[in-house]
Image 1 (cartoon, rainbow, N blue to C red):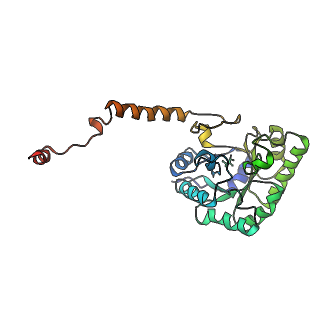
Image 2: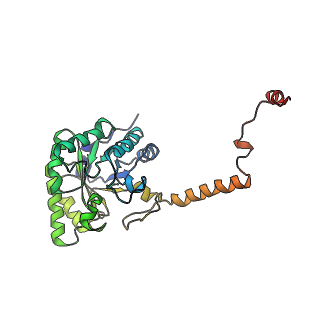
Length: 280
Ligand code: KIV
């Protein structure tokens, strides 16, 4: 029998029970299926697809249509995990109407169960509007890559007391607006611990220390499937780039040496047909 689908209600229950919540990214069908089969609770179709898969320098150019395309593929591969679609830059900031319409596309067209958006008090109204349309929303504060130019780079947030207090206020305002969880990215462990004990909704940390209610990583980072910059908070569980380079180089060598394809990879005609074919 298929395992019960994870819902936002599980997130709330698991926080109460202190059962850690797991979340990983995926952008396509095969990886989503693997992540789901590994028992991960939630799959984020992150706008990090821009950096990791689409070759952009930041997440800013990622479009709604690209997110819908990738979310659809992920949703087809998942039977247990909660699928969260990441709202790209400027898909929720312009007006509440646009925010609701774009959030709705993730559920209606792509099969996601929830959406995520970046920002604190400044996006609380958008969160409220999306939630009141019946769409679960995950918040995301701390290092929010869509605000990279305002933040002055990809750096740890909330290191000063005043900035840490602002993060606490952002988390409270998101919780009040109805988010079901809050991703805390690149904040000091002390700040994450305080937010986690203050807000009623689960916190999911990435570079936020061990005291969050859950942990999220970019799957390509943990698999060593991405050869770009790897931040300090990433734990690498495999080095698939090296494995893949070996395999690709092996194919190149084998073909040049005439060692591929071998007889075991080759089809033959039945003997009688061959004889007939070779007549004349
Ligand atoms: O886009 C993404 O992958 C994310 C995670 C890093 C949380 O937002």
